[in-house]
Amino acid sequence: MLRLATCAFTIAIVSAGCGSAEKNFKITSYPSGATIFLDGDRWGLTDAEKVLVDFKSADRLVTLRLQKDGYQPTGAVLSYESPGEMTFFLQEAPNNQKILDVLRSIRDVLDQISSQMQTSEPTK
Image (tube, rainbow, N blue to C red; front, side, top):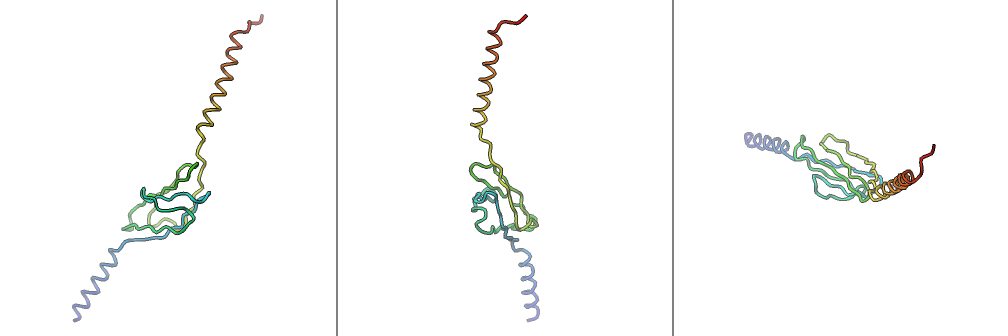
């Protein structure tokens, strides 16, 4: 009977060591409402609730990515040792069309200046 109890105790200890390593994270973003992706899978939105990450082992890494329309994606690589609360400040994505429009305007002004310089008479 003692041998059976010892075996059961040993199995319980070994099984406990094989369990997955889970950790809750509170992910906040400014502005709020960014979509959270864990290892490429959509999980939810920032500021909504805690994110439970299953590391499967203490040395496993998980990729966290945040996306929001009009902002550049950002993220981090999480480990079991990562802080439980993380805050991300999202940067506005450049408005490429606006930049192109400004560059076209500059080009037009430079073309006008060049044209005026070619048609004007040189001064003596």
